Image 1 (spheres, rainbow, N blue to C red):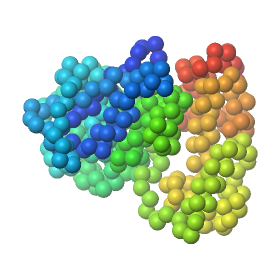
Image 2: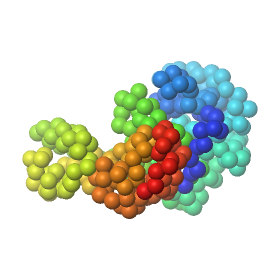
Image 3: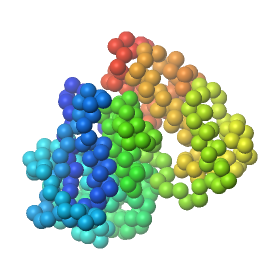
Image 4: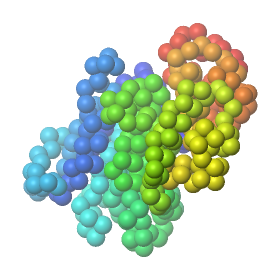
Length: 336
């Protein structure tokens, strides 16, 4: 999201198309349909127009023994605002020239592109990632880099947002990338609502590690860390340091840092900053508190620190974000 223009709600619902293909990865496709295709009566209406389109004139056999008939048309594909490639049928399976050509055409016209897991092979084959950063599932990284040396592979990232192209790692990272787009288009409150329906955490940033090399904490350590994280979320305004968090978790600072990294994939202080930024999203959207007040409420201490972390995450200022997504009429008049 860092390089994209946030959606103006008056523009209407974006049109999302999932590319389906012979050998379709059903789980990755299910993620796309779940996030972009489900009715949203609890939000007053659907967020996106959703369609599934095949560009191959052949029967579509999906993983798990299913035969798929895509009801979307090429017109849907050509007019889409967002094209999602939910995996690909194999890292050694050549992407047809015709698909590459049509992917390039919609991208040139201005469509945003999102790949999940091995779907990055399609974007790379189309020549759209040369000189750009991208990610994929960790087990494909070495092969992908060898096949496409012009791509800057960010091997550990959950997802990479290049503005008009978003690539994601494994299946769960695909959920994160889809929610990232929803947050980009509609703001934190709606993205959080979609995440709650998925029964998952509302926001993991793309730079978070996609896999954990160390085993998860044993002897109840993960339970203690979960309780600690819930408690800190309830007390974001308080001062939290490695030493105080380690003491609360009943661990030495060294053990705490090692286990927290193993448990979450990111260092404790980075996680804390992400939680504070996420909370600021909601307060900017739903209250008329000034930026200075919000900075204290989420634990940043002052508005300058909050602006710094906010810009690093979204590349917009807190007030610009509020103007676009606030549900409180008075909030846009607030000055930090």
